[in-house]
Length: 310
Image 1 (cartoon, one colour):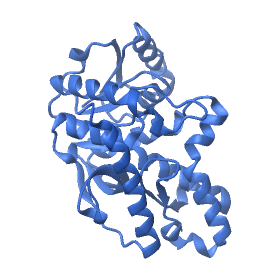
Image 2 (cartoon, helix red, strand yellow):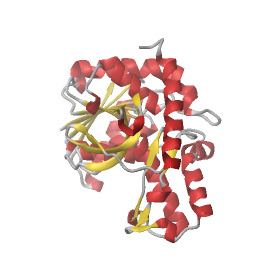
Image 3 (cartoon, helix red, strand yellow):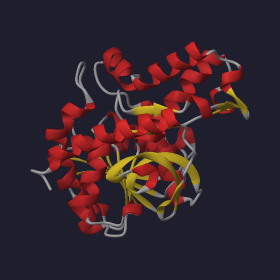
Image 4 (cartoon, one colour):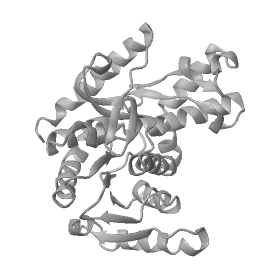
């Protein structure tokens, strides 16, 4: 199996490293427009093989899409990262042209690939990729909900002072600071609702911290995060290539699900060898439904900026 990752920056390189170390695929192609940059990152990763004990082949290339031919999954991380004070929404005018060109180039050489979109603003870039390529909706997946849910469970773990791996929870809605919806009502600690351990005030703080999780790291680091996003991509790619059918919140195209149409937005999905194999209908309460509708309106308004690109 073969995975291509476009963009050898912090997120792309960390994604390649996580996929290689976990032995998810036999070959990874890391592509970047900067001369020699992807080659250097790939060589650095390859030099950890003997100490970490994996045999995945990692190849770096400079803007050579022919080397990506036959990829089963392609991951698009290219585009400029957020800087302090910059919202995901402000990235749209710059990153739309980049993502459209990258997606078209990848599919010339890997027409059957499943596409995972990481570039921000992620919901809008996922929608752009779907519309620009004309691929079936099951083959275009935005990664954001995977990452947001990981952050949500981390904050719940800290509030509970319990292991994060014992906590279940998910975030739906748009992948933005004001549009994501951490489902605190449905979160559990080893099957027990977290509301039995945490007050409503504590749950509200967890939700608020989750929603600004990316911005918090940007302020601390001076750029976007990369360890958690890279690991989230690897988790998603693993479910695709190994047909694990995990239930993962992802940004996908909806046609009536959750009362929405003609947008890509975060909803719970079964992810397997065919990409999005099912959108799972979880029963939201009235408050959650209202929040989801508001989130969808915000995502839809951002998509209006794509008219000049599509």
